[in-house]
Length: 137
Image 1 (tube, rainbow, N blue to C red):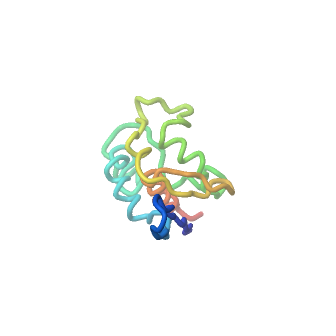
Image 2: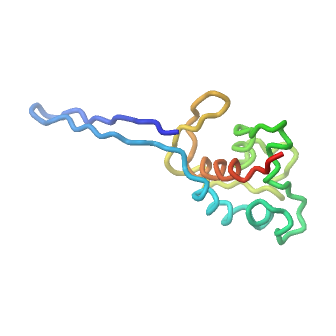
Image 3: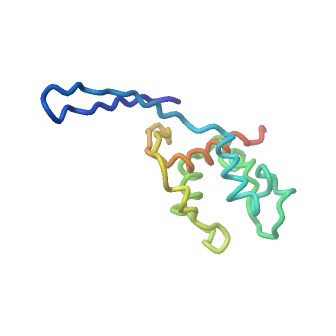
């Protein structure tokens, strides 16, 4: 999804031209999210979300089966909340740390439950990656 924002600088002094520029905000790629996943999540959830490859004894969920746990639909709001720490639920910070750096940076519009929601780009990238690795069936 791409959204366009037109930014214009208003003249400060009479006679200056108005400068306008178009900025295209697009969803990050799954590859961008995979880099973040490998840096922040693979230790507990396994490479590519595959628990068989993980190197820890934590009881982390298989991230390739998020859709299966939610009747075949990827729950974007719940996933974003779990990653950023606000939707911790029954998972304590001891097992699922907050990733403050994922809350920094450029905000991009992400469609969540029918509403475009300003979301930090790294957080959106990670969500996009997780959505891309969902197992079929």
